[in-house]
Length: 479
Image (cartoon, rainbow, N blue to C red; front, side, top):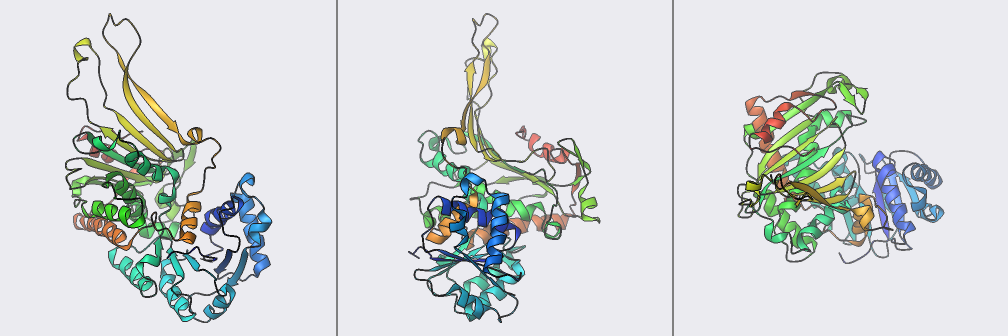
């Protein structure tokens, strides 16, 4: 695994992900001099075009999605690109693809961004053409199945050609700078780790809110729903990073070992600990938007919102609830983690009329990357009518703290790690399967109880039952 690839093969090279994320990320890396000079990037998809046609396609995508100041010498990047059309459902075109890839001097990295139904035939095609050797890495874009069984089928198909140390399962949230900073916050500062446990933390909230509806994902989303689309991967990965024990070192095996322990310690969720919802017509930022059933064109029981009260049953977190919430057509686009510390055991200011609030750590992941800690401070004055206390924020806005640093696309880090062979920010098979086991149990409970989504108005924070889920414990969602 100790090689930096000099060939990168992109499946799904004309798709939306390639246009918005992959090509811009690779161009930005090239502009910063982070790609080896001899790296060749080969795109493949069903679309019929030649090298020049694909370079023009890439140019248009870069002009649309990558800021001009990050493009560098676009001509230099475009010269790295070539293209081979392919129908992955048959073996016929894979020999021509292998010829296009040529003989890597150091190694080949493959990024598979196609429909999951094409994973198995693609793997067989790569084996047929000899593109599965010891110097080949395979990167898989989600979704990796719709449940544990289908996920195992995909992983078995990939494992038939590639050992685990050469498989890179991507979760783009792990490439976000603030998500990585969560590890630095916890394990590079003595301030937090002694308090990071059930003795000092009251609860944790993780919110992933979207303002958009179905957009171009109609068929996929209605088969998936919020639980599979967001909770199974992104949110459980965030939970694992918050709750994991300190790893022995900053390497792929140590970090992923600790994450999977958390996922296996998740308590099975009861019926009363989940709320589902589906949005109806409303308004987002003052603009009218249709309901889910209107966008879909039919009635559906698919949830577009889910809230869960989860528990990690180990010594560190026993009794600490983790409240997870995600949904579409919510009032704002935000992804954040809130760590609510416990109240002080005794307030010496109470007899003076002061009211204290517990400390709160807010880790903003998107759209703004920031870390904010709320502390109690005395309001200036002579205090003749009592002592007044107020929350004062300690705010670290990442763009301000690191002036001159580019705000990178999450895929930049992940693509570079793939090319260089670092699996730290990729998801291991046992993690994926532990996540699916927990999710499948929730879905089974819904089916047994005949649970259907509550409706909520687009532009609201979801069904009222989600507010009650937290308020039963005296908790208010952070908004």
